Image (tube, rainbow, N blue to C red; front, top):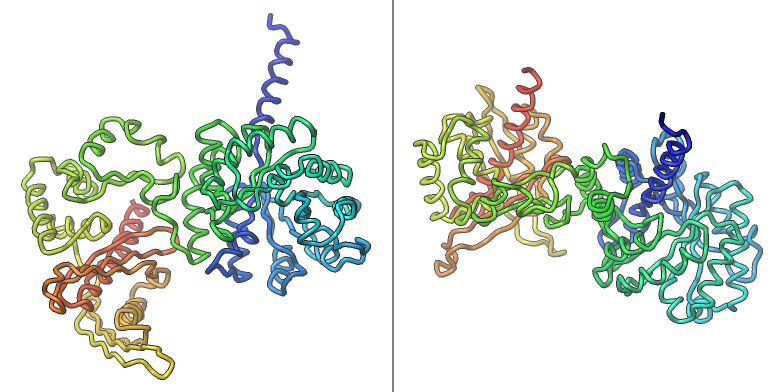
Length: 548
C-alpha cells in the first residue's frame, strides 16, 4: 500500500518547486523599445507585436501611457477588441506629482483610460533624484508612492511598482531606498521591481541587493535592467538566482541608450539552461520566429550573432568544427538549435571542406556521394567562382542555385529581356533620384515596368518586382534588408570588379545572394535576380510538399 500522506507530501513539494521555478516575463518593447534611436511604432505595428508576444506566451506587455500621446490613446482603444490568450496588458505611468492630490493628477487619471487590468507605476528610490531631480522632500516622495498605488488598488488594478534607480539608491542610502519599497507595499503593490535604470551595476551587486529585498519582504520581486555595461542579461539572470520572480526587458533587447535586457536571451538562459519556466514548454520553438517577426515590424536588422535567435548562433565555418558537429553536435553547440526554432548552418568557404559542400548538395540531390562526379564538378565550379571574386560564406542561397544548375535541377522562373537605368544629378536639396525600365518574359508572356528610386539599384529593384508581381504575387512580401558593395581589385581603379551582397526577407525567412561584375549595376542585378529566384523556388517547393 502507498501511504496517502507521503503521496500528498510529494505532490505539495512538487507544486512548491514548480512555483519556485515559475518566472513571469514582462515585455516593454512598446514603451522602452520605442525609446530606442531609430524606432517608431505605428498603432498597427504595436498591435502586431502584442499579438506576436501573446502567441509566445509572455506574462505582461507594457504598452505605454494612453495620456502621453494620441497614438497610445488610439492603441488602447483598438486593443480592447482583441482577445489575448496569455498576456496581461499593462499601462505605464509615474506616481502623482508633488504637492497635489492623487485624484487631481492628469497623468494618474489618464492611466485609467487604458482600461488595462495592470498598471505599472514608477517612483523614485534614490534620495539624490528626489531632492535634486524632482525637487521635493524625501517624505513627500514616500507620500507620492503610497497615494498613487493605493488609488489604483482601490480601482481594482493589479499594481506593478517600478523602483526607479533602486540599486544606485540603495548604494547611496540603503535605509531610504528600502523605505520606498516598504511604502509601496503599504500602498498595495502586487510586485516590487528593482530597476538598474542607469545600467551600471555588476552581477554580484544585483544578486546581493536583490537577495536582501527578497529575504526582507514577502511581496513578489522583479528585476528591470538596462545594458549600458553589457550586463543586462547577466544581471537579470543573477536577480532570478537571488529570488526574483519577474523579469522585465524588451524582446530583442533594443531600448534607450544601449538597450534593455534581451528577453529572447533571458528566456533561453533561464528556461533552456536552468530549468525555469518562463513560457509554455511547447512555445520554446517560437523564440527565434518571434524575434525575427519583432525585428521585421520594428524595421531593424536582427543581429546575426544574437544568442539563440541569430542566424549565426549555430553557424560553423572551420572544417574541424564542422567535422566535430557532424560527429556530435554538442562538441561545438551548447544546445540543439531546433529547441528554440533556429537551425544549424555550415558556411561555404575555403576552409569548409568537401563534407560541407556535400551536405549542401544532398539537400538538393540526396543520392550524390562524396566522390561522385557531380560533387567534384561542383567543387571545381566553386573554386572558379571564388577565383572570379564570388564569396559564398554569406550567400548560401546563391550557392544553392549553382548546385541546382550544375545538377540540371534548375529552371528559371523568368527571363530578363532588357533593362535600362537613367541617373540624375542631385537637385537643389542634394537629393539624387534614378529611373529604371525592365522587360521580363515569363513563359511566353512579356511584361514591362518602370520605377523611380533613390539610386539606380533601388529603381531597378522596384521595377523588377513591379513587373514580376503580376505573375508572382508572393513577391509583394519580399524586400531587401541589407546591401553591401566590396571593391575586389582596387589596383584597377574604376575598372575594378565589385562584389555585391544583398540580404532579403519575406517577413519570416531571410536569405542572402551575391553577384560579381566590373559593373556595379550588373553585379547588383545578378544578386537581385538570384534573390527573387530563391523566393520563388522555396514557394514552389512548399506547394509540392503540400501536394504530396
